[in-house]
Amino acid sequence: MEIRRDEYLNRLIVRKHNGFIKVITGIRRSGKSYLLNTIFYNHLLEENIPEDHIIKIAFDSAEDLIRIGEDPVVLDNGKKDRKVDPAGFLNWLMPQVGGEGRYYLLLDEVQELGAFESVLNGFLRRDNLDVYVTGSNSRFLSKDILTEFEGRGDEVHVLPLSFSEYYAFRQGDKSEAYDDYSVYGGLPAVALMATEEQKINYLISQMKNVYLRDIVKRYSVQDEMALEEVINVIASGISTLTNPRKIAHTLNTVHGTKTGEATVDRYIGYAEEAFMLTRVKRYNVKGRKYIGTPYKIYFEDVGLRNARLSFRQIEGTHIMENIIYNELRYRGYQVDVGTVESRERDVDGKEKRVQREIDFIATLGSKRYYIQSAYAIPDPEKYAQETRSFEQTMDSFKKIIIVEKNMKPRYDEKGYLMMGVKEFLLDPDSLQI
Image 1 (cartoon, rainbow, N blue to C red):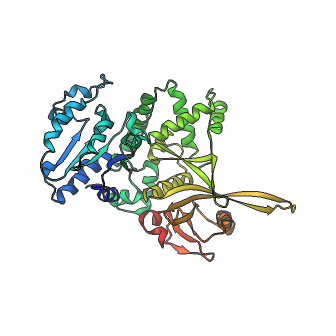
Image 2 (image 1 turned 120 degrees about the vertical axis):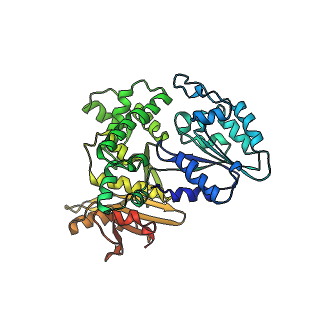
Image 3 (image 1 turned 180 degrees about the horizontal axis):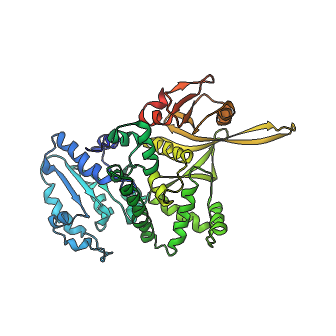
């Protein structure tokens, strides 16, 4: 059974023939290559594009390298500085795209091609080429890679499976599916595995031997243990406000290290560029400005987060918040953490300034939603606590409360929309109800 990625396929379809290089980015193992080489390739065939007008090359495939006249020894890990010869590749390619009509170039792991930026910029000058590339490892993991293409790169960022994608493949009981998803995440390979043992071993191995190793290799990190400890502290504190100083303090007092604030900030930046983590800034709703620190950090995949902690710290509250954050990004929203300030009187009648948090401000064009991730609301006191920040926004944007239990969307007496997390995740229009 095929795992469908219809949302990302549609994002590629609407970008066809736009004169830009379509750059498919994302954390390793998120399904970028499958999206390009199987799903999008099949779409082109269904659109009656002749096979000889679809040039599909994977620069990490020995078979494809032989096809273009390259020695497959370039794949040897011992030859770390070897790249595919760009001149040899172009000499092979140009006769392939010299006929009538438009040609589609699907280039996978393009960072293995020498001088790939110059090669791709050259393609921009040819009207008969529509170019799509993926890349991972080394510099192509960087979030700023699009600047290499002279401002003519169009990014499609691929996240691991959303819960709706996962459930469409998994089926069965929604609650059981959500429980599994909140533990093992949405990497496509994990979704295809049959046993918990397979999933656990795979995620732990990938986190250590692929994701962290890529960061160490790219940035020549000398203190690998310090990097791992930073990731551990972040994993342990997802969805909580933090900053490099706080993380360094935790490392130095609890773990006995001597890691500086600047080093922590640098390691967080490395993990961001590798799409492993995302820092989310706070936005002052009334002041209409961003606040630098503290901020929140979320994992691109909760399964990798749990693996980093050897599956010992599975807190439903924080994991649910991380899942909601990733879902909002999957739907295309710009996401911030909100803050609202007010002047209130304490029990002694003294006035004081109070700052309250809104878990997410989700913005897309003129649409804006205030969202609270409230794992459970067992009583009126908890309800008041979760909604007090809504009352201080003093605007008319929709306000939404998401809880863990199954709950069909409904409006409460204050006009706030309440729904269960599974109902939110499985209905792409849940915010518009």
